[in-house]
Amino acid sequence: IAMAGVAGRLARRWCRSAVRSPLQVISFPSLQLHLSGTAMRASQEDFESAMNQVKLLKKDPGNEVKLRLYALYKQATEGPCNMPKPGVFDFINKAKWDAWNALGSLPKETARQNYVDLVSSLTASSESSSQVKPGADREQQEYENLVVTSEDGITKIMFNRPTRKNAISTQMYQEIMLALKAASKDDSTITVVTGNGDYYCSGNDLANFTDIPPGGVEEKAKQSAIMLRDFVGTFIDFPKPLVAVVNGPAVGISVTILGLFDAVYASDRATFHTPFSHLGLSPEGCASYTFPKIMGPAKATEMLIFGKKLTAGEACAQGLVTEVFPDSTFQKEVWTRLKAYSKLPPNSMRISKQVIRNTEKEKLHAVNAEESSVLQERWLSDECINATMNFLSKKAKL
Ligand SMILES: CCCC/C=C/CC(=O)SCCNC(=O)CCNC(=O)[C@H](O)C(C)(C)COP(=O)(O)OP(=O)(O)OC[C@H]1O[C@@H](n2cnc3c(N)ncnc32)[C@H](O)[C@@H]1OP(=O)(O)O
Image (cartoon, rainbow, N blue to C red):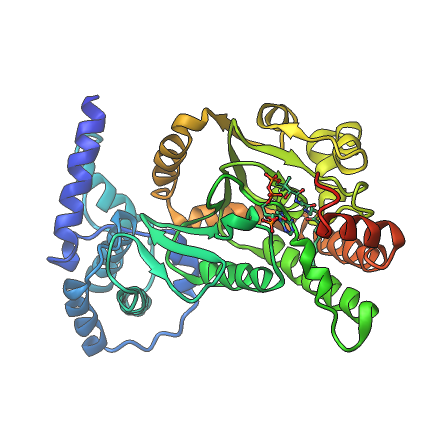
């Protein structure tokens, strides 16, 4: 408890001191590699100007960055660390000493350049984030079928067609891709996908197949396969932790792509249903690869070929869901947890995700291409056309 109190006080002191003086700032080791490669051009004037910019930063850059700035400043002005090592309980001075000492014999000019570059990257990111509309919950308005908000370091993409059980229309596929691309570049640390209303998502909007272009059904199948491949590809390549908050039943493609998320939290009201055979279809979203890997081939067969609907508890037992919460406390518990996770170092989380994903990326893209091409054929099959017609003419439901 005492240590936690000390840590809290230290963090507050560091935050307060960061914008007062470059002498009182603390590091960001992950920037070190990036910065050490830059050319040594910064003049004394650039350096002094950067010191002034630090004092004007609108956003607290965090303790690690402050330590890094401190270390670079000391290295640039005094050279290699020349202070005696502080005692182990002198936390602040020990952290500063460690940061400075870690720069070893980095030449003064390089440290000066790195300091200038670091300040310039901080200024740029604080300018771009200050262009976003202020407010605790910043909603971007440009989507018809989604509500996208950013708060507490979390971008939330919410399916918003509750009267259609959040079925994904052609336009909604495009909007989800756009929202994910924007989220991959914004200053949030975690991206969350969830649904509005009683459903998480009822999968592909079966009316998508009624909008036939002049090229006929073959052309429609071709366009749909391209869109599907791009859509799933956006999830494969998404660079930050991606979390599904499954608020209710999930069907079809909204289930299969869960295998590409980094965590899946589900209400105990949620169900997971991939009725592909009933619809004359075959798996997509890389599920033909991720599901057998996650739950074993036999369990994957029950879901993907026999269309067995899983409860949230079953999906959790089989590894598709990370954790299940009672519906009454679902939102509160999940968002409290996500807010805590969103405060973890963003670069570390992003890099860890990439390390995990990169080993499989090529394979996932290949699987995605194959699944999309198989579906292009399935959509033209009698089995699929009949099942779709039965649903649309209200003769069938899942
Ligand atoms: C181009 C890329 C393609 C990628 C391929 C993906 C494959 C899949 O995703 S397969 C899964 C497709 N989804 C379904 O088959 C679900 C169909 N829907 C249903 O079976 C039921 O609607 C339901 C079990 C989800 C919900 O039943 P419930 O009785 O609670 O509600 P409803 O009254 O049926 O729904 C309200 C309203 O919403 C319409 N709707 C729901 N889901 C879809 C859907 N997927 N596509 C089109 N429309 C859907 C439903 O028809 C109702 O409309 P009306 O109020 O006009 O009757």
